[in-house]
Amino acid sequence: MKRRMMSTLAAALSAALFTAATAPLALAAPTIGKIERVAEFTGAMPTGVTVSEDGRIFVNFPQWGDEVSYSVAELVDGKPVPYPDAAFNRENADPAKGLISVQSVVADGRGRVWILDTAAPGFAAPKAGGAKLVAVDLKTNRIVKTVVFPAEVILPSTYVNDMRFDFRVGAEGVAYVTDSSIRGPGAIIVLDLASGKALRRLSGDKSTSPDPAFSARVDGKPMVSTGPDGKPQPFKVAADGIALSPDGATLYFSPLSSRALYSVPTRLLRDPGSSDADIARAVRTLGNKGASDGLEADAAGNVYGGDYEHDAIRQLGKDGRWRTIAQGPELSWPDTLSVGPDGYLYVIANQLQRQAGFNGGRDLRQKPYRLLRVKIGAAPAPTH
Picture 1 (tube, rainbow, N blue to C red):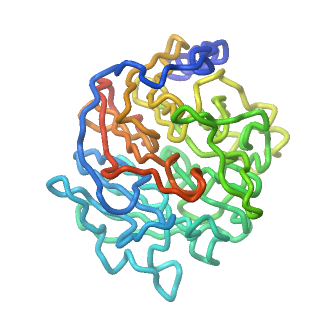
Picture 2 (spheres, rainbow, N blue to C red):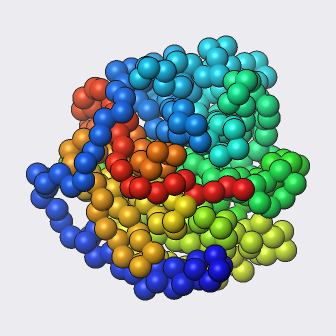
């Protein structure tokens, strides 16, 4: 029954085209949806959030130039506290035994929170042996597993960005991770959590690469960065957002510099016998969703994406239609999304587009950064 439902949804999605995302919106667009404030941050800029099955909230802060005292924190009484402790949040002589620069955190629905360490401060080349996944047991708050990415899937240009888990396959499950490189090929990395073996999939494929015709327009102006020669250059980032269908059969993903949503069967990603050409032929384009950073899916099969050009969050329903469920100035650059057990969709709004690198050297961010939420009345997508 679930397989049939997902097939029907996939057919509907492939026919969907979200034309509203390409239409210009007024800068003073009215607020849509009830956007609630959960927490505020006055220090380093956050990028990731996750909510565990028992309602605990975790956030992370990458090393992007701000002073970062700790890369991962739990919100306790609304305030960030280093997690799992302050010591592990410091770089270690052994790159596998300390956090270097964390891009995302994900609670797995099985009593653990996973930490994705890029080992690439400031988008530099990853430090050898440092790019890793770390699992922390929520009962003991102790590290129970560390999986270092094999060297063959981590290129000098790799920037591991976001992840989703499926514990219904493999001895201990698999992780799907995006490579959102800014100067090399994007990809989907499939990591077997038991063996530590990994496959680099769709490396440099159209679906994981920046759209060459894409030009972001945020805060009413083109979003460009300063190149090594000091001249403006297009904002180009590869595969970033990622979401997994409730049955684990379909992976959704999107480059940051694109408005397209893609999907691919996960069985092909995991099969060592499938070539990238085989997988590329199976990739489906699911229409125009707007330009997203984070993606998420819920237990009902809805898919969510931020729209950073329009300060909005959109939902792709099972009928194949996109809807704006939240929009307002507080959603300035909606980054990571996480569905909580309370029926809320949580989102980090971090004003990424106002960093100095996109504004001629002027930092236009206005603290505090915020963790927000919107009621969706759905549960997190199951992982097991």
